[in-house]
Structures are given as C-alpha cells and as structure tokens.
Image (cartoon, rainbow, N blue to C red):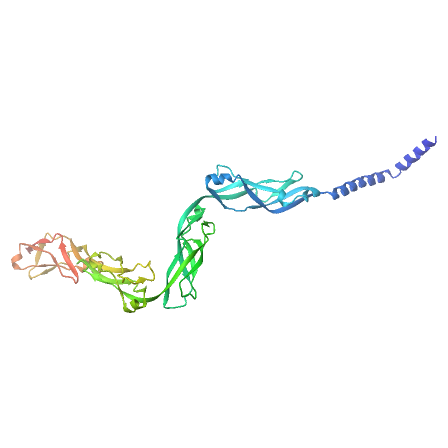
Length: 410
C-alpha cells in the first residue's frame, strides 16, 4: 500500500511542469554533444609549398630528356578531419607526384598532380590539380674557349699580346633549346694594373650573342688557367699599294681604307724603324663594281698585329660606262645647210637614240636633251641622208634607229 502511494507521489512530481523539464533534458543532451564535439572537432588545415616529385624518372633517361620547367614544382594542400588526426599530420606525410609515362615527347605538356594523405584524414583541396611541364632533349656540344680581357693595364705603351687558356675547348651539356642559344664560352681576365707575364685563373661562362650568361647548361669545367703576356706597341698608318689600272669602262671615284691605322707589336728596335705598314699589291684591274675588297698586310717578319683577327679592307666606289636607249621625237629636228624648204620623206615620229657614258652622266639624261639634226646641201635633194645628234659632254652617241630619210624639194 505504501509503495503504491510513493509511486503516485513520484508520478505527480514528474507530471508537474513536465514540458519545462522535458525542454531542460533536451538542452542538456545538446550541451553534452557540444562539449564532446568541442574536445575533438572536425577542422581543415592547409599545408603550403608541398614539393611535387616526378615519378618514373627512368623515362627521361631512356628518351634522353630533361625537365626544363618547372624544376621544383610546389602545391598547397588542405586536409580535413578531426582535430587530433589533422594536427598529428606533418608536411612529410603528404605526398604529391607527377607520373611520367613513356609517351612523353619534347615540348610542354599539362600533367596531373596526384596527392596522397594518411587514411585518418581526407583531402579538402589542392591548389593545382595540373601543372605545365616542359621537356627538352639533352645534348652535348664542344665549344672553343674564348679569352677576353677587361680593365686597364699599368703601362700605357703596352698591350696584351698573349691570352692562352690551358683548356682550349670544353664540353657543354644541357637542354637542346638552351645549348643552341650559346654563342661562345668566355674566360674573362682582369688585367687592371698588370704589366708582367703571368698565369691567372679565369671562370668559364657560357653566353649568348649578347654575352648574357646561359644558366641552364652545364660546363665540363668551371674555370681554367690563362697565360697572359705583354709587349710594347705602336700605331702606324696603312699604305695601299696598287698595281695596274681599272678597265676603260670603269672610273674609280673613291677609295677608303678601313682601318687607316693599325697597331703593331715587336721589339723596340724594330718598332722604331717602322713608319707605315704596306699592303700587298692590290690589282686595280679586278675592280668591276662598287664594293668592299679584302686586303693583305705585308708585315715584317718580327712584327705582328695587336689584333690578330684584323681584316683590312678597301671600300671602292666606281662609275661604270653603260648604254641607254632614249625614244626621241623628230618633230623638232633641225635642218642645216640649205635655205630652201625641203620635205624629209620616211621620217618617223620617233627614233631610238642609243647613248653610252658613265652612269653618273647618263642616268638623268632625258629624250629632250638629245638634239637631232640633218646637214644637207643642194646636191642632196632627191637623195638619202642620215639623221644625226648633236654632241653631248661626256656622252657618246652610239647609234640612231631609222636614221635614213630622203630629202625632197617642196
């Protein structure tokens, strides 16, 4: 009996403010989940600059290829998971790869980036799903070593006459597109303040036609020993020695030596005796056109040029004799020698006059500059006579077409 009363009492207590109590219970459950979730929530974390590795690089070796761009690609990867799992991951646990297959050819290709993360988390995002990768054939080429000097030597009466590298040539390896840009391999020696022969170490650099360093290629040697030497020098004029004459059809207008002065080296005694350097005989009969003609210097045995690569030349301008045909009107032909009026039977409206002379004289000659005439006397009436042209300065009248007409009295 007592137990039944207690049960009813408990039931009454429960029913009292039931909705409020139910609401509190629900709120408590929600708060419990919130607290539990707050201890290890779902979070997203980004890892920057994950290195992308090239997988199956043996393909490159088999095809003799190199990757030119990008050398070290990077991506940003975001992962998602519970906080405990996400923060247990470090950068080295994330793997980004590009798979190279045997179908790759030279050129630029868009390749997929494959990202792997530990099973406890998942990938939220990747900054680059594809990367442009450039492939090029690897080639090797031999280049001579070119030595150049910079700076001002101590003795102004001297010049550098010797600059010989121990390594005459080097091997250069790299992507074909970059190797083809290389113009030369330079060894630059600073001679500032120097005046005695010595051996110096010079760094080797592969450069393009603008002497900009090509960094993408590899040299078989990075430096070389260079022997440098000094000698006294002297500047003297070049004397052009000529033989024969130009042909009758050629008039030489101008001759210009390049250079006019040359620097020579030798022992002091020999240098003091030399006042000029002659050329070997230049045959003027070979001159046919306006152009540059090569010359050879006649150097004494104990004398050499400072610039051993110097190639002296002479620029020659000529005027050539040419023929020109002008169509001249006959309406103003002059009749000389008789006072009576006559008719010229068979006279064409125009005749072709061929003239000959140097181009400078006849290039601007016009038909109206040609004055036609006929010289006749009383005995020429009824006869054929020849059309002539008055003489011009420096111009020869070669022929006149249809130059025969008959003189008829009116």
